[in-house]
Length: 307
Image (cartoon, rainbow, N blue to C red; front, side, top):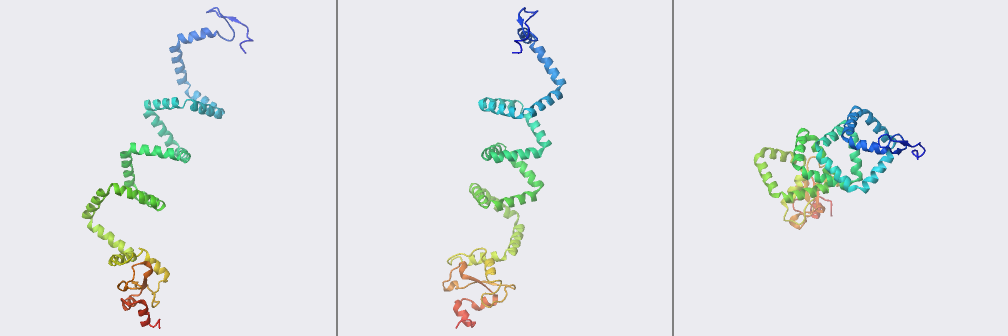
């Protein structure tokens, strides 16, 4: 409409009339004839004014951000496959350069990228899991080596992290170990045998240390093993529970068990008693030796507690 109100002019080159600042036909012909020269001049100008162009682009983007994002989103929806193919081709042709730039940006502001990645993973959990799994299987050997180096550099950190994960995910840990053991049973058995042959002193030391720290559990384990032909099996923590129930005192004489105790079957196994939690009690060594294989009623009568 602006061109319509301008007076008509005659082009000195082609003789055609035009309105505006220049004859569009002649300008178009000039650009086609001198395309390479114009391109070179533009590249030279851009190189000389890179900062100016960058600032202009930044200002324009900030002023029109919502409009640009909406336009880009609409274009991506309409041309999704073409855009994906173009990006893939560009990445394949410039992989090292793009990776280096991305790495430099992450190093310059790691917190920004960490936050962005966490937000994206929260919004796209399944996609993130699939990408992580694909990357892991494609780079499994390199990842394993990198993890081994990190563990060697700071073993305590990884040990604490693993303990925390196991405490939070006991069922998952049990399932993972069962699956791994089923797939590597022969290998694991061979490793254990080899370790035992090479480290007998260390194994004995660890066993003695564990036994000293878990005397009650060792006592229950021995009782179960000794009475394996009897009906039932004692819980591994039965001594701890009985100590709380009996308030640390003998079930017969009510003396303190601080100086020692025996795990006694209330109804002796020899008289048909079962090796179960409900048929055991804690007695002082003296009371247990006096009771021996006697029925509970008989022993309590001897002590004068029953008529």
